[in-house]
Amino acid sequence: MDARAIAFDSSSVWPGLFYFSLVTMSSHPRPTRIVLHQGSRTLEIEFDDDSNFMLPCEYLRVYSPSAEVRGHGPGQEVLQTGKETVNITQVEAVGAYAVKLHFDDGHNTGLYSWETLYELGTHQDRLWQAYLGDLTKAGYERKQDA
Image (tube, rainbow, N blue to C red):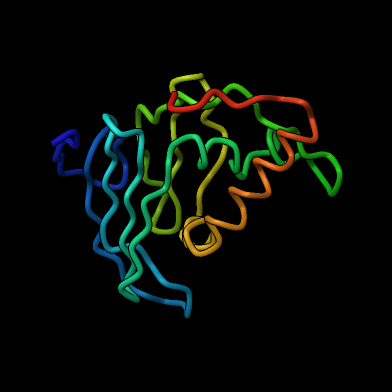
């Protein structure tokens, strides 16, 4: 198995596997378990509505909620290329509402709220196809089986 089991408190930074015990205070689903599979470069997230998503690190990186990727307004997005082999090195809890993902390309400025992660999981197929279409329009050929 390529995941590491580590207990943590919300003030620590830990790679690998960690669990959340959260009080639901909103109508948005909350994660009940987050597992980082570094070998397969995938973040597995289970939510309290029984949803389970396997989100590739590349997908999470290119859809980072950071200003570096999203810009500061409509039309300022920056297409991310060359992220086929990016991995997550650390997952940092941010209060009881988000995680900060640290990528091995040095990117770590986006806060992934529970709502953002849920939306990325729910719309993964559509968003991934949109990203691939944007790469094609930009003339970038993505490395296969990276």
